[in-house]
Length: 251
Image (cartoon, rainbow, N blue to C red; front, side, top):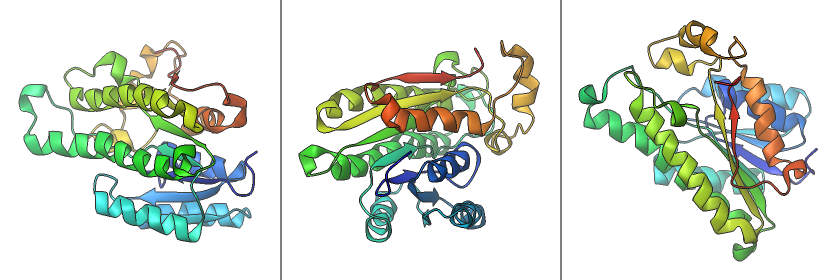
């Protein structure tokens, strides 16, 4: 259970894994900033559910790949919830399935701007608030990567897999960089999880179609990933940093 002064930002917190994480964080005692890019109604639903259960929550709009919007978001969290103590870098995008020789510059720029640069910008601002080097009291960061980093997603999403591969490297490097400044940095790598991200990639039934290839013979639920994220953020994981935790059913 987090103490009353614990403040968490969940990027992409309005749907899927992000929403499940925001709700579980609130039940664990965090004040929750629910970030969203466009879907204010979905973010408001998450915030309303948290408040109805007696928690503190705030919906904050920002495209994490836009530095000015990220700075404004962190400023709003500072003013309305307090100093950040936990960050979940969950915001991310996919695109329609394509081979590398079909990918446009615009697609690649969007993929890496949001999935990679966005995580860097949010982590940068979190470190500036959490690090003992900057007068903070410490904290924890969990990056949401993907099993695609190991699988490569050929013929579908090699760009997405590569962007998440960058997140794995980022997690390792940042974890080492701030380990003696009171900040732990870890990542979860979800497998086939039942979320709306598959539909946004043009394959709404992708997870169910591929479920037979999973050793556990089923897809995962967003709540199962959220549980792993909250454990990595918790005092129970106090000696865990630089970990890449697969939540894949064995895939």
